[in-house]
Length: 384
Ligand code: FES
Ligand SMILES: [Fe+2]
Image (cartoon, rainbow, N blue to C red; front, side, top):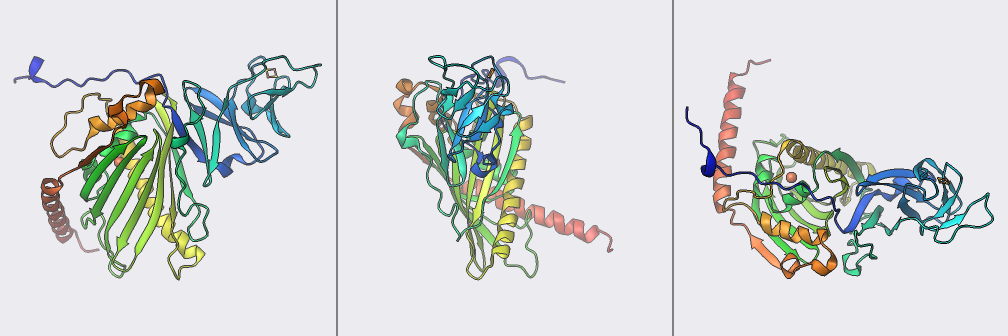
């Protein structure tokens, strides 16, 4: 037996994941979840936070640990506009200031804790993370979502799951065309990336695959989908995803977002709203949405299975038919450096359309082989 060793072998390089967390808006989930008058603990950015709704209706995010003697505010109680610490009842406002100490004559000067800028928009709660401590960058406000909280569309169907991996794995998906065929059983026919400023977009069209999603007799035939997806900042992606059936198009908006718990785990969230078709009542529309949400959920579970088991790799070995992973990572780096250190190549416009000719030819053949194998297996199967 021979073994290849030494310089012939490509080595996987991987520096430790950064301890620093990305600057930018991060969605913590559907805002309604936090509107029950109780404090909610959230582990994010290597810290523990507390989210609470004050009496004025605002959602607030503070560091969970009380500056008095370290009590955990997420175990406390909301009293009026403040969160009261369970240890000695100090009252903290959403702006981070201690407003009252019930047993004291006055509040000490500079009694202030870390407050996180929040944004309550389109049914979602966002926090701004910034290692430099600056206010949110105006141009990076998350985009408004067409159809969110709109009667012509369904409510959010939202999922949340914890993944034991570094967040960079999720981002890589933006440039990774081939995995859509092998992991998600899609068939991309068009694939283009555009990175510019704080936005990284992926335009993708795909066609139906009869081998992985066979047409059910008597139902409208699925033809394929078009998708325009973009990250706005380091963690919040919107995807205008249209499923094309022979009798109609189903328009959906998908959100794919995450926030880091620490450098080796993150909370992955995805949500979907579906435009109600003419002639569909509420219930029927919700059923369509639930069906699409199931596809989406399966897709994310497929990714998670890969991420859970794969190695971190700083030097992916790419072929011509792969997307611009390195350029994407360069774009992503802008969120991990101080604003003053953002280099032009991190934010300059970059456009790349993949030539899908060769992969499509091979995938078509693969699909036909799979169908033939399935037909042969069905022939052999005993008739029940
Ligand atoms: S530790 Fe919070 S009030 Fe004392
Ligand atoms: Fe994926």
